[in-house]
Structures are given as C-alpha cells and as structure tokens.
Length: 337
Ligand code: MRU
Image (cartoon, rainbow, N blue to C red):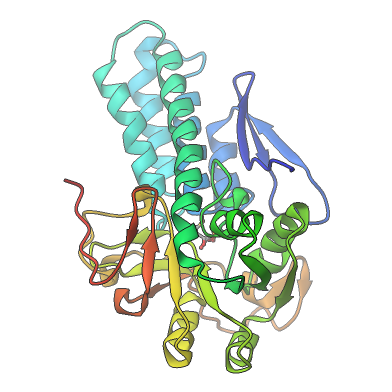
C-alpha cells in the first residue's frame, strides 16, 4: 500500500508535497526558509490542521539553522510571529509553535540549540504519526456493518504528519471490510474533497465517488449514507468543533435524517482554553477563491463575497468525537488533567 507523506524532514530541509498541484502532478517544495514555509501554509500548498502544526514545528526549528547565538532570540521571535500569522483557526499551529518555544526557552544558551529544536520537531512529527494510528484504531467502534460513508474536505494523510484522521478511520475500516463506498464532498471553494480526498482514495483502492456539496442532502434522503465522519481544526471544551466550511450543514442534515455524525481529531486539536465554539477565530479567505477556479474566472471578481474557510458545528449535533485517547460521547466537557 502506498504511504503518503504531506511533509518530511530530509537533509536539514522540509520536503512539502504541493497540494495545490494535486491530483494532476506530484510536485515537491524543498526548502529550509521560514518565509517560504509560511507562504506554503498560507497558500494551502500544505494544509490540514495537524500537517500545519508539524510543518510549523519544523519551520520554527529551522529558523535557527546557521544563525549565530547572539541573533537567536531575535530570529526565533520573528519566525514565531510570522508562522503564528499564517492561519488562525487550526489550534495545532499554536500548539506546535509553543511546544518548540518551550525547548527554546529551557535550552537557551546551550550548544547545538538548532539540533535540539530539530530533535523536538522530529519527535512532534513522530507523535502525530502515532496519534493518527490510534484514531484509526478507536474509530473502528463506529462501524457496526459494512457502511457507506460520507466525508467532507480532506482529513487524510495529506492533512497530517501521518496517515490522517477521519480518512484514516475510513481507510482502516475499509481494510477491515467495513466500508462499502465513500462519498467525498467536492468541498467548495478549494476542492479539497474532489482533488485531495479523491486522490487519496484512488491511491488506496477504496471505492468512492465525488459529488457537489449540495448533493449530500439527497444522498441522505435516498438512504445511501450510513454515517458521516470529518476532521476538525479546533475543538472547544464543550465539543463545538470548527472544520471546513460546509461541515455544519452536514451535521444539521445528519440530525434531520437521523444519521450518525462523527468528528475524528487528535487531542492536539482540542483547545482547552476555549470554552465554546463562538470563541474560535474563523479564518476568512480572499474573495478570489470564490470567484475563480484555479486561474479561471467563473464570475466577476469584483462581486462582493462572503468567504469563511471554516464553520463551527455545535457539540450537541455530534454523535461522538474520535480521538487518539478514546471516543468521547456527549455531553462533551474536555479537560487536560
Ligand atoms: O483549509 P484546510 O484545507 O486547511 O482545511 C482543512 C480541514 O478543514 C480539515 O478537515 C481539518 O484540518 C482536519 S485535517 C485532519
């Protein structure tokens, strides 16, 4: 089976699979430059909450490569600010940056600080791989029969340091004979579903079809969907979960059609400082992402547009949240004790 890795650390550089080129070409961005990595995150060349976190951890560590000690603090803090400003919703970004900063503060003045930070980033990445495995294992519990599953956006290997969250649950269930068919929402406007999830599913040999986001309702009405499982970018203490725009629509539809709706995410996506979903910062994207597909204008680019990248699904609409620790059922009340 093909192993997909969105990001890898090779020879003191990051190798990022450029997701804006998929599914037509597998091209890599190879760089050790923090600004280039920050740009890759902003452009969604690398995307998905856990993958953003892993990439940012490496980037912050790389910021000290070949930097004399007297400049460490200035360069490190500038890089921290630059990376923090890339995408506001995925809490994994801030978790990863603070994780590297902790070592920076504790190890200030030590020889080979760069190597120490890189070791931490590698450990962070390895841990993400492990979290993906655990989520997939715990996710088996949601399959009571061979199922037809709908997913939104891309929460696969492309979105993490390892093999994915929601899509890894589906993949593992498929390997264990519990998935009949996957319906992948195309996920307007950037088409993470029809480009990225579809590409992963075809690489894994899982039967699937893509459909416009607005087709989900009729698929449910026709009895073609047994369950929905998606990822998350930030989960509040009460279970409210931010994920790709359109996720909330699916949760409402599932509630109406009495179809189980699951979130799959690592513990690193839970924001213990955030009591409820209305405190989650939602990223707004450039209007052009709506008025163009790729470089083709599909409407007047001057038309006003409303472009949130994410929405928040209330915890009460979520059947369960699958994490690396366990499956949480409502009412949700997360604590990091
Ligand atoms: O804008 P994106 O493509 O970064 O949005 C990604 C999502 O919404 C994913 O579902 C989420 O990050 C979970 S990825 C395991």
